[in-house]
Length: 70
Image 1: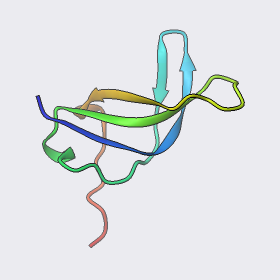
Image 2: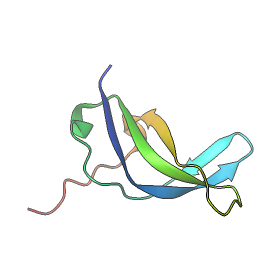
Image 3: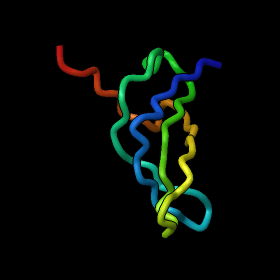
């Protein structure tokens, strides 16, 4: 299993009954193009003044990877 993570900056995640809806842009994650799982930093939108940052881990095929600008 190959894992990559881009946790900063954490992005807001909508709180659902069964988890979170995750979307946003994260910085470079080394190995992301060959990873099977990718972790990203999220801030749950749970109504609190200071939400606790978390990491959402999802299958890599749920992400779009932007190769960046050369």
